[in-house]
Length: 107
Image 1 (cartoon, rainbow, N blue to C red):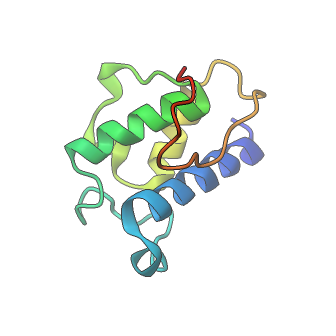
Image 2: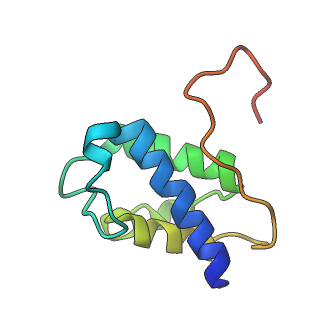
């Protein structure tokens, strides 16, 4: 796993959690080791949204066997999970998309 690629994935996921799940005030304390499940940042609905975001942004379809609490405990483990399931880590990775789109095509 390329350190630069892992770092990029971690940054994109951190931004997603900061913007979409926490909000400006709460995001100030977010680190790569913040226990997302333990603190209730990720629940079943938000985890499903995160998995969809990972699929759309990184092109990674996480297998059902990877849907464990241990794999979603913090940003560091989620980034490692994403990188480990990417078929080609040289692909360009996206940034946080707007929360809503105006009827554009979905992939």
